Image (cartoon, rainbow, N blue to C red):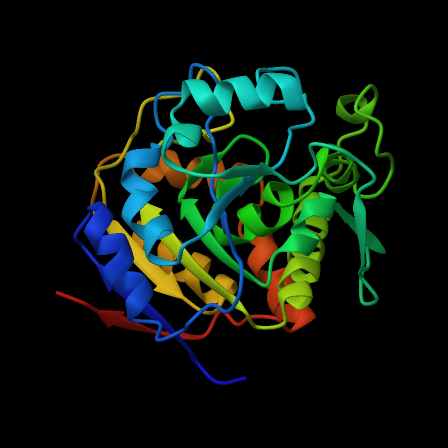
Length: 294
């Protein structure tokens, strides 16, 4: 597999997101789903809709999200829609909760070691291409969250999230947290489910990671730690594995005093395993060329 191109700018602005997408020279065809994180109620770190607006407008996209599989303000369609309105997403965009109504769409995972299927919201079938806008940060279950997390947990329905978190044991929200998978199995399951979404869109996908508000906690946390590192910039790629690897390498290269705290979160949960598993599945590579954009 050839080295993937990853573009990087230290600029952090809504306009820079569009600039980094343009560097990919990838015109997303047809109806574009733009995957974002709507932010849990109480979370102070998620990227707000105003920051995403120029990018979503540029591709004439529809913002898409899925319900969660844990207690909070996003685990039912009714609550999630109210929070989407409260956070301002529906003020600026058409927002599609992909799993607002069942039945879920099953995506086969023929090479899966942990999962043989992925469950995603059925509305994903209404889109021809996918733009994944990820807030790169830590994560209390996966170690870190970036493009691969958005493709896996992010695109999975509530039931699909349960399957991933339990390494295929159950899709029942009532028992999922008593049967959480090991770190390695969880990372493998995330890589497998992410790969099924990449395969589904058949190359009609692009990825942008924003390295800011660098907390060890995810935007899914109602009570999240404040950022422990200074903002780094924006990266883009057509390869989600290379993109996440480049972001992690920028963390390693940083001299920020909060770097070790961030890395400890990643290491404690074997967070980098997802990239190894994804590369093994063949839909991305950790071998990349970083291209700096002034």
